[in-house]
Every structure is written in C-alpha cells, then in structure tokens.
Length: 189
View 1: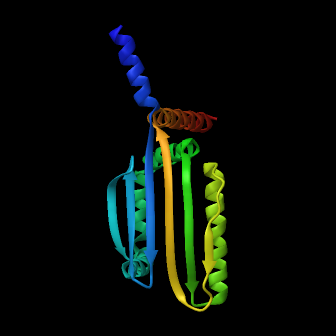
View 2: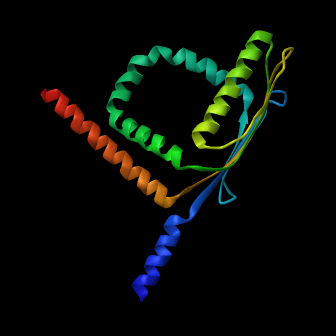
View 3: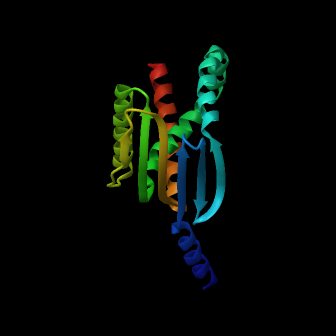
C-alpha cells in the first residue's frame, strides 16, 4: 500500500509542469533595462542592465575576433558536450508549452532603410519562434525612422514537465549513440 502511494506521489511530481516566466524591458532613452526570471512566479533572477554597456560589449566583441584561433581550440575540446546540448535543446524546444508570449518594440537606427530591415527581420524571427513553439501570437514591432531608439518589452510564460526533461535527455543520449555508431560504421567502409 505504501509503495502504491509513493508511486502515485512520484508520478504526480514528475508530471507537474515547471512554469518559468521571463520579463525583459529595455529603453535606450533612459539607458537602462531589466531582466526578471521567475520560477513558479517567484523571482529567482533579476538583473538591471545598462544599454550603454551593451553597445561597448558589441564593439568589444568585434575586437576579440583576433583571438579566434584560441577560441577554436577550446571549441574542439567541447565538441561532444556542445553536440549533446544541441540535441537536447532541439528536442526540448518541441516539448515546451507556451502559455503567454508578448513582444512590444520600437526600433530606430537613424537610417530609415536600416530601421525597416531591422524591424522586418525581428518580425520574421518572432513569427518563426512562435511557429517552432506552437504558439499563435503577434508582436507589436514598430519602426522609428527618424531617431536612434530601442525600446523593447518582452514577456513570456513557459512550462516544461520534469518527465519531459528526462525523456528529452534520454532521447538526446540515444541520438548521440546512434551518430557515434554511424560514424564508426562509415569509418570502416
């Protein structure tokens, strides 16, 4: 009797969806932004960002292209881990349930053509993400042709069961084993 009760409680916990809420708000006029991640609506991560630091980080990323060889050697060492994480991510994204997805943005680059291209690319990316996640939604993304401005407000509520995570991890391991078996077989041929 105790084993049956323990099994029912265990199955209930395994099938319990883990709800994660993500809120991102950034404004270049104010120069600040905020990222909040909540687990079961309890804040677990909160970070205030400086949009000026983002611009300097992007320019710093261009300067670090000189160290590409060092990065390539490190990437080769972690190739198996990256392959597993990629396989896990591909499987996990199809198991995620989206409860809410909202994006409101106003983007201006100072150049009308660049603003239109940026807004179009962001709309396509958002719609593609909605398609992959199986969510029907629309983003309010507007261009500002005359100013350099970035205002983004994003909120989303996602859930994933522990059982889905275990299933995804096992599936990714089986995919890795099958790839390794195929590569060994093709190496012998």
